Amino acid sequence: MSVRVRFAPSPTGYVHIGGLRTALYNYLFAKKNGGTYLLRVEDTDQTRYVEGAVEGMIEVMEWAGVPHSEGPVLRDGKIVELGDCGPYIQSQRTEIYREHVEQLLASGHAYYCFCSKERLDNLREAQKEEGKTPRYDGHCRDISYEEAKKRVAAGEPHVVRLKMPENRDIVFTDMIRGTVTVNTAEIDDQVLIKTDGFPTYHLAVIVDDHYMGITHVVRGEEWLISTPKHVYTYEAFGWDAPTFVHLPVILNKDKKKLSKRQGDVAVEDFKKKGYLAEALINYVALVGWSPEDNQEIFSMDELIEKFSFERVSKSGGVFDLDKLNWVNNHYIKEAALDRIVEGCKPYMIEAGLMTAEELEVKSDWFAQIVDLMRERFNRLMDVTDHMALFMEEDVTLENDEAREMVEMEHVPEMLTVFASKIEAMDEVTPDALKDALKEVQKETGNKGKNLFMPTRVAITGQLHGPDLNKMMSILGKETVLKRLATYTAK
Image 1 (tube, rainbow, N blue to C red):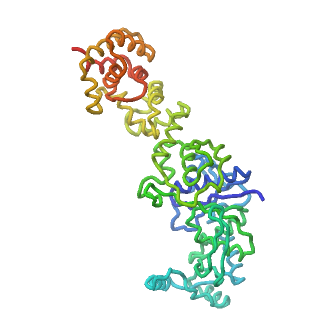
Image 2: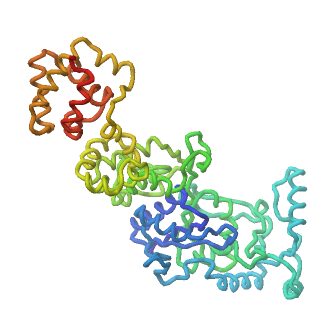
Image 3: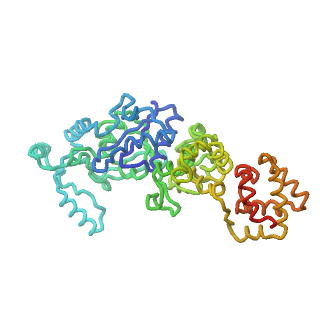
């Protein structure tokens, strides 16, 4: 049977970084096995639905480079569907769920429950006080199907619950966790249809995965506790259950579940700050999975080739922002310059450093700066942190050590000689500046640290940085001479 997997998020506002990893692992597994990866929108909880979230989700996954071959896509700003197993949006499948819950009711695998919210709240509180795990007590299990139908017809509020067998072991195999056994004494009679007529996840996911031919259910470990109910629901319908794969949770550095309280968790947040899609994908793949060797930088094709669920950890993977920054810095340095330049421009405009028109006029100048400084960018937005060197009139010395460098006795005469060399230049190029510094070394006897460090501090205010000759070339003759004048012999 051909592998078919799905990413099935709820449209609740944004794509969590954990959702991106789930989608990626589904995609990698499908591609490696010549299978199909589809997108399904699980929007049965209408109270949590966020307008525009579906469109945003599709756009983010396209940006990340994790495309699906079935499911909703955007065409000219409108949602259309690809594939033969639709609708792929659950709220458009409600009639299918109603038909199937009727099957479970008729076969005795489900029952109507008329318990009020007040009764359920009181039951839950009483169980907590007794030190018990809150769960439904089966109060409506023995109401006959005929009587229940009459009460439903009379308009009495109700839900439909799954009727779990008593004292039976439910056994299933998870590709990461192995054999899992849970006794039904520990399992609640799950609600399948809510009072609003919409199905819960626990019904819709079974019906959808069956009819969409899903062979492997790859999802977060928070659903592991519900899987025995799902396995039994498949059995109740007379269907074969798919293979289950429950992924470890993503943790922050404190080993707690990654949440917005500790910082960015939405893919959109990382995109806005200038993380490259391939860098984010590369890093997220490694949060919970490791290759057999120590390779850390992967193309998508390499990820597809090397990925396997056997190498996914049972324990949570730590999301390390410093490591992500290292990976992103690698991709920024390796990417085509034009792409990085274009990616940096919006941050310049947003910071008010340059207008779009100025960036157009000074495009070559700006590209030279980006090319020189991008080795220091962890994110594209970092470009604004480095522009003062090139745009501000005065140079600020970064610390006392820098001040000591330009206050050494030999510095004024040495920089005066260097300034005279620059004055004589027709064009300030990196090669010309390199030659000039060699001449300064011969004429003054200053070399190594005594030559280059004071020169760098005079020009930039900093002890370390990128190629000094290239930087001076970008700054231009007039600016370099003005900065040197602060420290030359009077």
